[in-house]
Length: 484
Image (cartoon, rainbow, N blue to C red; front, side, top):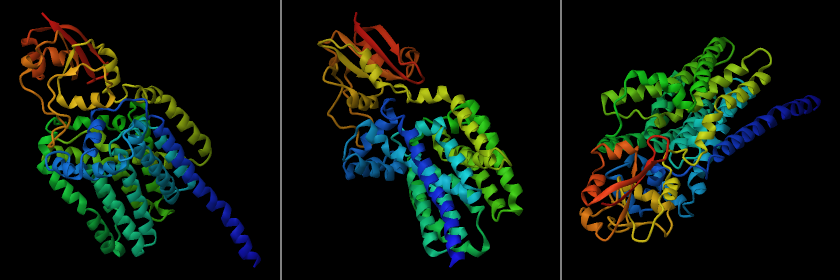
């Protein structure tokens, strides 16, 4: 009786902090991500989310047949989410919640691999990444994909620890969520194959295979729609040098954490004789961090150019976790070292944190453009790229110039552009001033032939009066043309 009582009282203090640590770190990371909401204006990709989610189910299927088919699960989720509203905070809330979930799971995964302090430090490092503040306040699926990936690694650890049917089912669901959240998130899955053991080979293969069914379907759809990403340039192997900066959205902090992550992987490998499974998990963490950029670059050269930095945000937790393990492995002063790393990281990344929280933090500053447009009665507006109209529809008030080229209110059912009149000169009859808005620099519109609408306005008898650019690249340019 006494032994049992002693054992119970001794166990309680160790269990309670574990749970509270997960909730604290998840809440702090979610708050850090949510703090970027409502300040930076929605960019074109987020406006595309509204456009897709606002359509009927049949309209969403029609869109998926031509463009963004691999985003269909996310658009379907946002279709239900936006039934409540389309305010900026509400649109971005799922991403902030996903960051909190990712940090919760990261804390527990760190505990499982090393200790509670390792999980707490890893989650804290994850929370201070500027990329977490960016994608945690972004109405696109990248934060959800990162959370799904952490969930998959966490569920796999549990299944390998005690391989019951229920735990393998949870792992299969986690893999399916990875595939549905974002197609290229599946590039982390080869790292999980490194963890397979002969005793669980069949069950793991079944869970992984069934979970990957959505990836096969979405991959085939995406391959058929690869024309929609023809804007992505081909990248060389030199792009890998910028990977630490990309995954953290901070140059110096990214390099420091990348070095710490490699050290954490090495330390976990060294401890393989003391900790069961540490060796294979060190390889899996290295694969989680390093394989996605390598595989994405390989797909770019073997299939079609697809190397886009944001597709690799799923590696951000893999940057933080082994870095946290490295700090927690210090023989002494690991708490002080963890605090120092977090404080120093915040200081190093302070300008980037400020940048992502500015109004132009997503580089499509439509509210700024609306302040530049000082409309007078009889003014007209023309869009250099018709899809820009969606952002102006979202933010504009009744004082906007007449949208003389617009045909109807709905976007193209096969994409995000809008049907427009082709007779620009006739549409501008009776107007003395016309505002032109385009995505890009002044030179990209005034000196190049990539935006035919500008030339058509000039041929209709108008000349440039003023032009202003929002600042960051590519940004938005607002120009006023008046009749000669």
